Length: 142
Image (cartoon, rainbow, N blue to C red; front, side, top):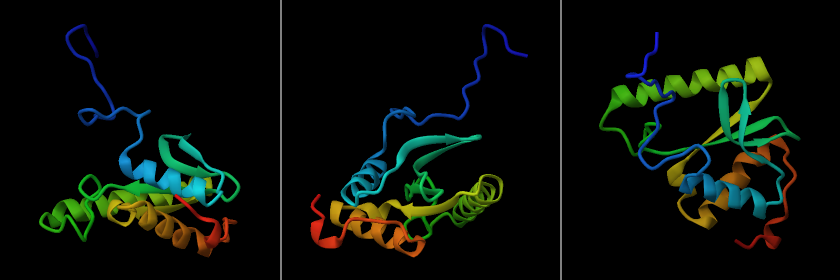
């Protein structure tokens, strides 16, 4: 039961973060998608999930995974319990999106989106196996 003294906010928010303000890695990913000419919807709500980027023509979600927030095994290895927890959480979300909604999820680590050129290469190589139509490499300028 809730009263005037208690307010529950879920999900808990990071200081300075709002759901409408993209993170720097989301911004890099969005820029790469635009340069590649891939239509997408940012912050797409699907059931209980908000997808960083959704490609409706392909039923693909792109998730930008901050290394410290999502426990990157390469850059967050000093806390193996957290890395394992985040890996299981991500795997479960990926499974639910695929089985319940028919959406394939591609998780991109923040360190692979470090510069505009890295983001472009990362997004391109992540989407190629799915047959996503993209602008040819020679037409890319960030």
